[in-house]
Length: 389
Image 1 (spheres, rainbow, N blue to C red):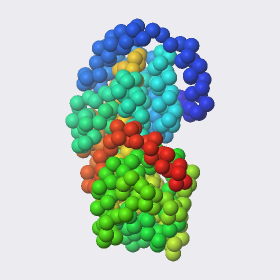
Image 2: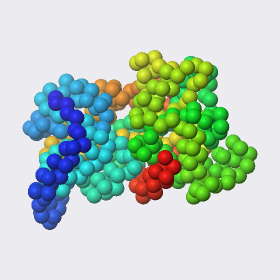
Image 3: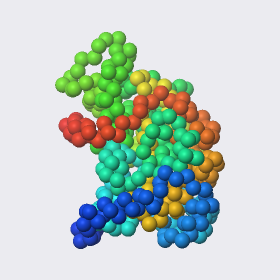
Image 4: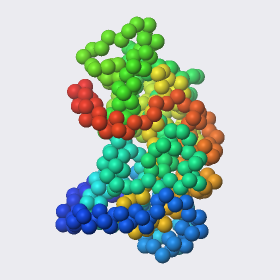
């Protein structure tokens, strides 16, 4: 196994390769149809069959946003020693550009991509364009929870951007309504990663904007009166404005913002708007951190990471085998899911047991992801954030 980190600068190099390598569109379209027929992505082959065929293929190349995927590869090559694998950790934005440019230039790059479709760019620019493809074997997909059984790709895990707090300094959740964070008593006591640099926080904000009627109702429930907008379009935008103008402490890293809350003095504990993924440290490092399990109007919106097979991959059998392993295999007991089986990292499968001191995924009151809405409205939100920040 080879592990690589892909710097942003590589995109410029790939672009030069692409510009010199683009071929004819008609020829590519014909080849693509042949590949789709041969790949047979709707098939549900046996593990033994896939492994035997994968032994004849070249090195499997995986691009992943998560460092946990490196541990998945470790267990995968132990289980299937005759398959060579290279995994590269690639950021969300670099992933989009890298895959798109490799496709345009007929460059043999990744076979499998794994990550989160923040702002809806994957779905709208990679999936809808046929650059990456869903692989959903029935033996696994039949165990997906609703609504994840309607997603593209194979959804593996989801996380939640919500309010986390120091549970040594607080006997119970300090708030139960998002609007409380706009009150004077929380001025300067909320921390978060700069939303201009955090696509997942942007998706939460976009969801609040999309469901502004619910945000409006939650405001009235908290304050006992109808909301008055202060130059904003709706209650979602108004919440974002009031939150950020309440002296929110912005940090460059979500991890740093969460750590600041976990390490805060007991007499002055702030809260953080951050990812539930950090709850894994409550077990591994015993940090005092908990999520607010009930928030009005909703706890949050999930951010789901999915796996896809890249168009024209020449290692389809090993790609299918790897995605099955990543998902926990047919019975949900495979070691491939082990690196993700932590508090706050929620399996999308009903048959994977997660026994932690946090609610299960289907116990959380969440909005549904709408990646098309994110894609269409991200630019407007970013302009709004720039004006405030």
